[in-house]
Picture 1 (cartoon, helix red, strand yellow):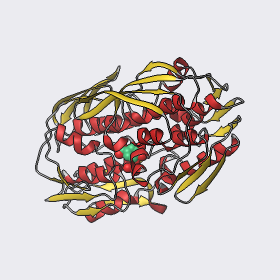
Picture 2 (spheres, rainbow, N blue to C red):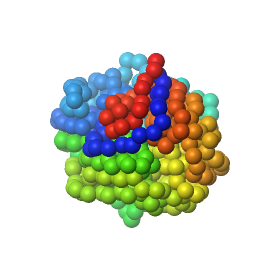
Picture 3 (cartoon, helix red, strand yellow):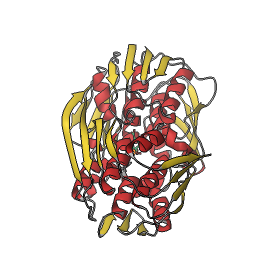
Length: 434
Ligand code: S3P
């Protein structure tokens, strides 16, 4: 699938983007190992969250839906999962593979986790290594890549682990393994990362201890009780439209019911630092997660040095933020973001290549990029099957002087299935070609 964009336009109106991907994954995982029926609304019906859902069905969990974002998970309790008949296919989803590896390491059965071409290139030793320290038997393939073969023996022991990188996926993997490990499992992170697992475990009635702002611990022996989960709109999906309104003259757009968990709001902070006219209002709490409406009106942006502390808080938003930087006056510098090189694609190189195609000066560095704002032309962009690259260059068209064609956009459905429809409604000139 390709996106074809005509240049120009602005974005207007009010919209609600689909449910948060991270929270949707976790709602299925924790619902499955809880006791009782968990009712989820606002669930993201994207391919990534569906990979998680199908994996639990394959492990014997009865799940009704999704239907209009509603899902009912008939929990089997911590020890009720069954051995899957074949390999569990995680598709494009790193979150499914990394979190499930921890959960499955605690079972007394074995499973093989496989993924698509992009996921099959992503590093898995970051979870395999600490899980082995907990006593798990896990094989990765050459270079520490998937498939992951996990031989569950039901006898993990708790450890303390200092995360070598700021990764919510590794932290969550170990906390899930910790539910099954003898004694205490604790994790210290080098910088705050998304804390949806910790919050949601609390929501299911499982004790999680936070020590200071860097360490979190769980003990085995508890149980999860089914609950209701209202998934907020995904700030990572909202980002494309926040940036769209920020760069396109005449824009005035409101995004409703957006999750504004403090570990996810780097994009808001960075856009404001760049001079964006962005207001967060109607703040409230929904099921343990803060939610708000966000209004963005066009205002000229200027380049900045992105503060280090914002990097993990905006890790998925950088492709779109690079488009904002390309439309800003002056230079934007990002450092300390080497994790971007191991996402669904090498997002530093792939974004730099695309920006070059559009005539923007972008200099990749090992751990970041320098982008000099300028005039965007048109051209053909390679998305490398990366959903966020595809959507970022789609919004770039608002400021381009010629058409943009973006190749290999199928994976947009992993996180944002109705992107094209919402983009058209908001004012982008976007068509799909197959
Ligand atoms: C996620 C954590 C982040 C993020 C990913 C979702 C999660 O990855 O990039 O899209 O749901 O825990 P890392 O933890 O590897 O940085």
